[in-house]
Length: 313
Ligand code: GLU
Image (cartoon, rainbow, N blue to C red; front, side, top):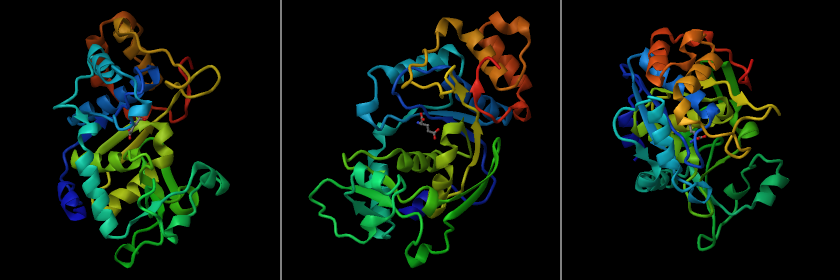
């Protein structure tokens, strides 16, 4: 199984550019999501690449009815037209189960019944406690991926991960100290983002992941997982987050206002401005199509400032 995934994602070029935007349907898109979507779209266009949309609808308790459709309508209103069909992660459960099975056979995952309180007592980084314990599989349990001290066949995989982010530069993370073994399937039986995101990026042959800076922190563990599965590692670029007046990331949780589709052109203009592209003032009230056309012609990722900031600076 692990081998067949790798076949989808050969380690050697040529690999045509495939980018993607992967929203979770927990609410409508806000200005911060538009900034990430636009950067990923324009970067793909600039490379004559393919741009996919994947709906990460894996966590029903956190989802909002109608949000997936609202997100797609919002992308359309902003003329961010994706290639091919939208992939819904809720339709991919058997693929995730197959990968988990393969990992179990290789003893790369283990059952874990630790609670949130246990994790808290460990200082927030899981310390591998259940690697040594016998877990009653008839009771609720999660499945965790080993990120260090792997079985002999995988021992060569480095747990000290280094990579160069296209926008944030050189990165390094020690997975034992900074991440800990990761949950791939939760106690409530839902597959975790960390499993689905990598399995789907491999299945969709994604070569470039341009997304919000909040995910820089989890990139090293994802790179490790690509390597563990024998797949090519995509290039990563993390765009700055849009902060609100309190210095927090705009998010559905802190009630960032949804994008107004009637102002699509103006939203795109502001997103381009945030991304350092300096769109001409005359386009401020132009249509989405016109602003986007300008963006496609003039996109230059070197103008992007890496730091998170509010939209007005
Ligand atoms: N679905 C994730 C989110 O909305 C993004 C996943 C990704 O881009 O890797 O935060």
